[in-house]
Length: 154
Image 1 (cartoon, rainbow, N blue to C red):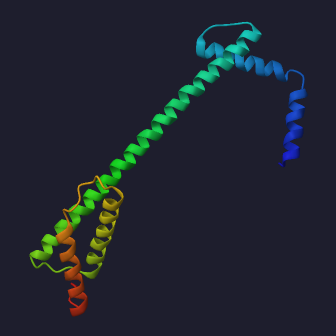
Image 2 (cartoon, rainbow, N blue to C red):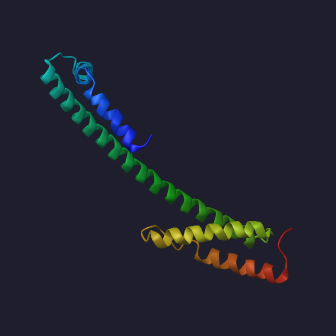
Image 3 (cartoon, rainbow, N blue to C red):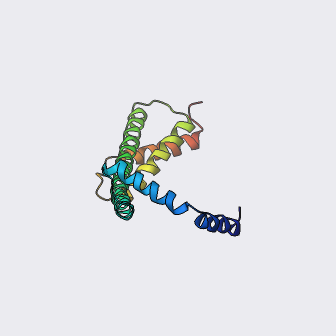
């Protein structure tokens, strides 16, 4: 349906006998359901509009609270992701120090964790950093060594 057709339908509805009576009845019904009190037609319409306005304000508060909660949850999830990457980096380095061989795919996966962790640390200067500096150097050194010698676990 195009805009002109929609406008014609809307104008026809507005001009139809009983349209405003239906709107008045609906608003009165809404007010009566929410507040439990009956009023005259104009009072009912005014009260219904007031009720709708109040409900809208309450919904806005709820939406704002949900948005804040979502932001908090995302921030917490980002911290957990960074901490998980750090744990995997440190564990992988411990395995290298114990001379446990790894596949190239595993190295690549850990190097992605390194990128994720370092990017998080750069964008969050208050996050405790510096815990993986030597581990990352060792992982990169071992990776280069395995590339040169073709000694990845197969």
